[in-house]
Image (cartoon, rainbow, N blue to C red; front, side, top):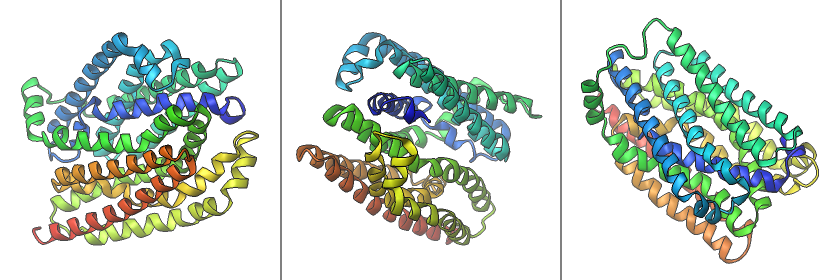
Length: 390
């Protein structure tokens, strides 16, 4: 529906804004929310949650201050001058999305998967409805950006409401001293996991930024739509699987149970769920997306075909990404991701140098296939080694 209201150029500018949101989110809370599942006591987890919220609010203020000083050169470098003052929605969108993720981990600890799923549906539905409504009002980029802002806000409010309605308060047992103690105990998350998440986010979002800057806003829009179409199952199924997998494997590890059988069953289940849809996308995406998205969007289907094998492997590896966090191997995971980022940037740079978006995208996807395969093998070996000591 959005593709029949907004042009590829407008979607490209919005995709650049969205990429900035996701990159900034990675450092907003210093990833402390990912430690919520690890401590045994609820009060310790609550201290981590409030610590994450405090850091997120502080990051929002810092980002707003930086934009007040440098928003013009930032917009010129990223070729998003068309957004104008709408760039000031960025800090709030980062805060709302980060809060949503913090509350997701808090609810995940309580095994409230239904609340989490409903929250995600609320956020995505509100975003889509707002963007469609504003598109009919001819608001161009403003409609897309404000719609994203509204969706993030409503999703956050829904999860906050659900969390507060539970028997235990989110602030139970929280004190400044204990928050500091949790920050020290789980300092590996800001030291290793935050840079790791940042490199991953840059890797995933840099194509939009580079395509918008070096090729055109339309190319960025085609790529963003292809990325969105492929990552939808990853967002819906893969991340839901991550929440369940992280909670259950934490329990198994804490109870000194075997991890490998659970990892194998998870991979087999995800393969069974994803193999047919991804295979169909690979085979029929060019005519399918030409029909589905409408005139002017034909190139999106060819982008989808190139990216499909890589995103299928991302779909499989997403739940397993918790394993190095659980086993204290954030440092190596971060170093792997730095190398991954370097190769992806080299792939994109080669395509830009040769003035060929197809070359850039093919090399980018190939690097993704190689590294995703390596990660699955590494996670498996990590878990197998950990079983010897439990």
